[in-house]
Length: 109
Length: 113
Image 1 (spheres, rainbow over the protein chains, first blue to last red):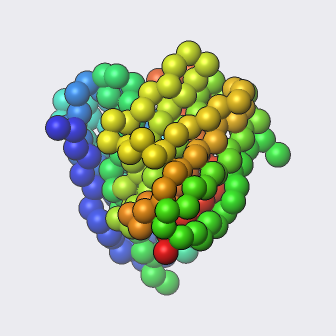
Image 2 (cartoon, rainbow over the protein chains, first blue to last red):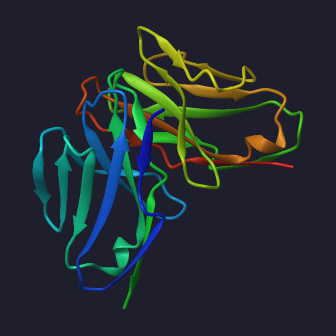
């Protein structure tokens, strides 16, 4: 079967750096997405990786290793508003999105 | 504002009733989706639809049916509601292309009593 694994919950301190990991086992690979979802709100798009390496976008960066079936989302200079769930999703060989359950990130002052 | 909008935001109803959730997107996207997010926060695809085909997740009961009057709308009809249908339902849209992200509506929290 197809599977996306993420830690259920992480805690970090305001101003620090946190790395949220995602490992996947899917039938084929056509890109990996990261989304942010605040409680009670819709998921919003953060990043897309299809080639190996690091994609940087402001305080957020996303890394992909296709050979390892692994990605991470790196959040720098954490702010209280970064408290949210972070969802990893992989597009498989049928171009269907397979979603992880999300990582709830708690930021403490 | 360009967006995906869905109504209502909250829907409380009794078992056995029939209800609809409306969704509209003004982004000019080709494909629209319905997702169910349960209490464990998994996003489960229910339907995806563009002007060429409707793809149905085979695990979705046939009490659920999508209706698309035009490219910008994909409504969700639910017949004979059950307690287990309680969840948040998200509409989304995307442009064609593997790198195109999904744009989500704000969700409809359905509570079946």
